[in-house]
Amino acid sequence: MTFESVIRSRQVCELVRSGPLGPYIDGFVEDAAAIGYTQSSFNDLVRGVSQFARYLAPMGITDIKHIGDDLVRRFIATLPVSRCGRKYSMPSVRGSRAARRLLGYLRRIGVVTAETRTSYSYTWILEAWLAFLRQHRGLSEGSVDVYRRHAEPFLQDLGRGAEPDYLASLSHVQVSDFLQRQAPRFARATRKNLVIALRTFLRFAFTMGYLPSDLSTTIERVPCFTLDRLPRGPKWEDLPKLLATVDRSTKPGRRDFAILLILMTYGIRAGQLAGLRLQDVHWRDGHITFPAAKRGRQVTAPLTTSVGSALLEYIRDSRPETTARQIFLSLDPPFQPLATTSVYNIVCRAFQLSGIESPHRGSHAIRHAWATRAFAQGQPLKTVADLLGHRSIESTRIYTKVDYTQLRSVGLGWPEELRP
View 1 (tube, rainbow, N blue to C red):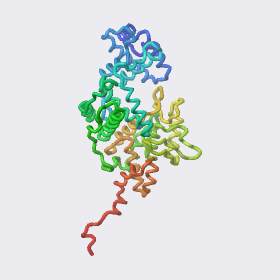
View 2: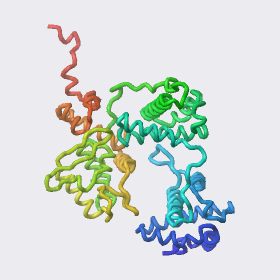
View 3: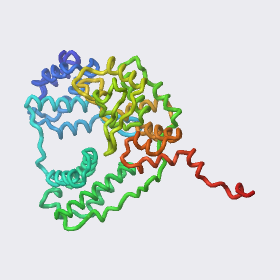
View 4: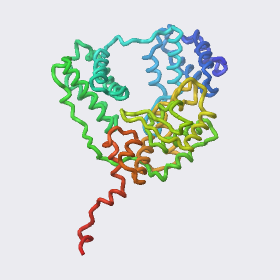
């Protein structure tokens, strides 16, 4: 497999060969071919590299060492944007994936060095704060990662102002300006998490003496009230339509069917399913164990016949051969374990194809429908909490708001109906 076997244009081939990528393009193609890409994915990768090379040509770059993260980001910003799931935008996958993989290859062979942050360093306080959250607040790594994702853009936005000699001059105006620019991008729950993260960080910086005043008090809280909303999910009777959207004669279909069936059977979170490993399925003992999520409890449940059959069919006929222990993997090389967002996308696509009406179409919608049905069947609150993996029973109480059978039993009749 060669570069010219995919790119048939002599003009494009000459442009790539004569540019900074020329001496390394054959090695990159051989490296990509060895991974085991399908022909379609391999062709897309090579075409994406040629697209990146055409972007570099007018810049007059001759030294391969000038290619780095910033240049790749600028290239990706020029790519056409597509709309995904009618909700968010993303650049062309072909060009962005190829440019990132090319840069990774050039770094592996040592012709391009990994970039280090030398302009404005904020890691000195970010890492100290995250260590405080782990050691003194006892937060899990998942929660710490959420705090990091909200605080790091704030520190990046400060630039030089995040360095030790300048942080003390931070003002509430800068904090407010950042929040006003970021908040409109997020839903209410995410805005709440953003505010909590910044308040916690600013309080830490003040306590440690890095700030002269506690700026956390200048940030207004996002009003969220316990049990102020109803569970957002479809009717349980509609969920079998999700399974009907899957073509089980294909490899992706067998994987997606197993994913949907497990979510419907056990009501677990997408992260728990993504983290499910081969050793978590106890075939002989007849049970399956899902990892804990959000500092909740590990969930152990009976392995139903239907789930066992779907898992066996996927593992035997569709799962790639790899050393990864996670059960669910991508079906394109290099066969990485599915991320939580990938599970969400699989479920969202099934909702769209099925036409099920639901205010929320992700994997959590199935969890809401599962819990609602459990209460409708008369399951006790503690039992449902254990099956959902909730550490606190208060997290489960939201589902009692749609347990109409029990609600009718405590409702008072109208005065006219009580008169003899």
